[in-house]
Image (cartoon, rainbow, N blue to C red; front, side, top):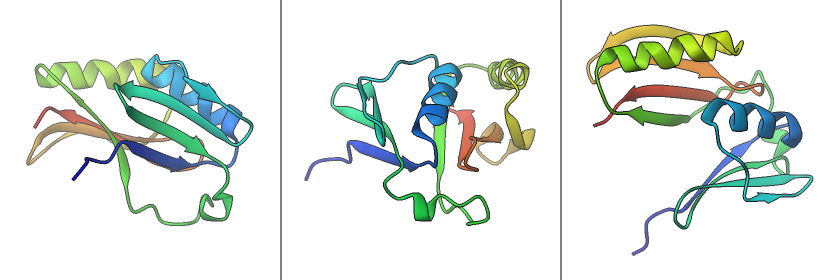
Length: 121
């Protein structure tokens, strides 16, 4: 069986979300339309933003998943990413702390979707 190759995030404003994720991850989209924007994050693997499910992208709706960025290196590498993202003005959901799997923190995108940074498994 094939592995998942599309990770879709519901957003209210595709343009604003595209700017947010482009700046946050320092990547450019590979496909842009008014309601769907895709970033190729690995060969054949897409991270995409979609407004077509906007009824599910309500800030008061609890989120049941997170976007994850696993980084190599020591705990200080995670703290450095946190500091650089705070300078960008991100909304912090959880400040850096040590969890059972290592150093981690969580921020929110403009729609309240969670983005976690953690060490490589």
